[in-house]
Length: 147
Image: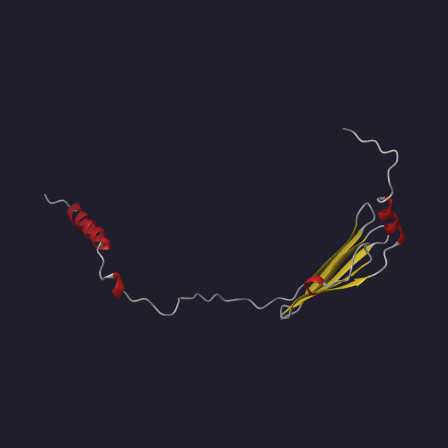
């Protein structure tokens, strides 16, 4: 009686051996001059709009608003106002010309030197912020240090 497994074993050995035998020298194999590239379908930008405003328990107000148009351009603003009147408002645009921002603030120590293509509008800080900053410069005569 002849076993039916013999042809399968023979085929398996021949397939394994032929997989490791090169069919042509490596120098003669065809290599495409053009790289293969996969093109994936993309979706057109979808317009959107969102925003929020919040007030924390310390009295700081924060906000953010942003919108996009069908070309993918984005416009928005974000910022805060603290209880003593110090604020920062950033208005921005991101489109084919890049990211551009305008910062309006009255924070002490801020200068309008325009780094990173941002325009600064610096205003005088509120008196409470200045007084708070000057308090740190007052020497502590009766300070106790623990060593």
